[in-house]
Image (cartoon, rainbow, N blue to C red; front, side, top):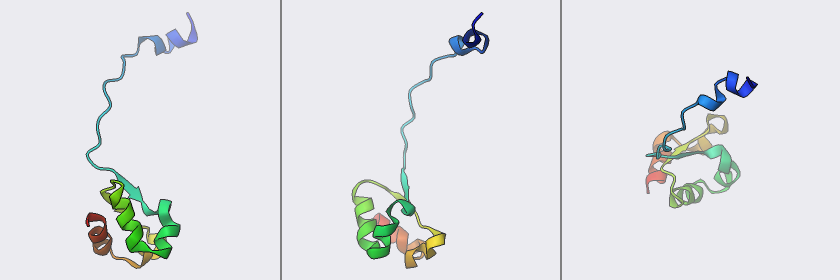
Length: 76
């Protein structure tokens, strides 16, 4: 018996259909340089491409924003 068969690799059930995500978010670290230069414009651009949630970075002092301020820009 091969190692794959012994490990059950050949007997696994196929995966079902992938779940569709209801929400998707962006960690602002990915756009940290743009956030440092123009947070409002960056958050507007993030929203325009379809992100509905953003995670501000405590290590960057939230880019001078409060969670409520960030939420307001993300929802505009």
